[in-house]
Image 1: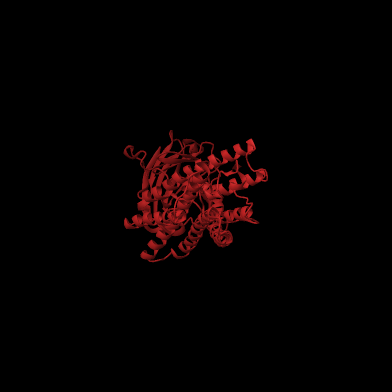
Image 2 (image 1 turned 90 degrees about the horizontal axis):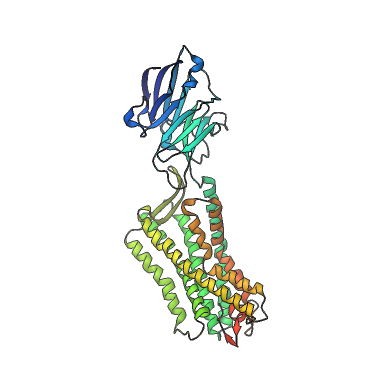
Length: 468
């Protein structure tokens, strides 16, 4: 049986002393919490506090003797202890529990010690891990998990360990600090490269528009591509300005940066949608389509509609500082963006808006590819163009319609580092893909022949689709 319990403590350190008989017939239970420390448990607080279960087999070698059990609960934030360099996980409630029995070190237990750390519902993507402090790890010690089994639950996590020492529960995010920094470096480098190639693409489109002034359809198509690439250029520039200036910026400046970044992102999405609508009119409707000042009207929608959305979002105070965190006290990036209080605005204007655009564009893309394959199979397609040419056009359309942005739906709450890297790289290099696609299709080009879709697919001397 257990003798009288003695409790005491200082700021950040609470201690419980128990004298336990070696002839104890049941497991020894001890409750603990970050605020009250260790104590003898009561029936009313079951499930509300953490619990330590010391197996009775632990005391059997000490039959006939009394042994002192010392349980300590430490607040490492106050004491400045148990700090591991480059630690990725967050210590639950900054709490470490130490257990000693007698004067000797105990390890290799067949019946393990069981600690249950109480907590609420953990955030999405956070994985609990039972660990203990190993003074021999590194120069100053560190956390290890060997010998401990982690069993997550809805209201707490159970740790079964085969030794006695200092324990805690680490909350490991799916995205650690090094991965987050790597993603930021890749995104920054990709933005600079994409901006350079976006400028090349715009210059190339201007050159073609000047060279073929008489081909109005070609000029409209190139003008549409120029606006999409221009929106990508502005988005990359806005991201670089945001990541550089957001930290420590004034509230007004941060709101402007957030609104600018949001506007550029919505412009990209809108121009992708307009590319899909244009492709639908050219390839599906085919005949009898004429709209006065067509490109001007597209520009009004492509640049005007996002401004309207951003104006409404700004009017309701949606913009401000935004922190990307991998733990409660671990901030990996500062950005000016939609604040967490207005997360619904993010889901509607970004996720929902792009989701609708993606579904429409992929439907148009599927129809275009199906018709191309059908006409190629029936021999209607122009014989001078190989299948690889159609494939090249398809890849270019896939990029123009923004399909790579769909990876964002797989990166919810940073659940997968490989997907995040893939999303960052592909969308940072979208401008490069478009540049290569346009050069491959339009250079060299004559008035009589072109590599675009209109000259790949023809039927009875009637153009089925104008140049994409």
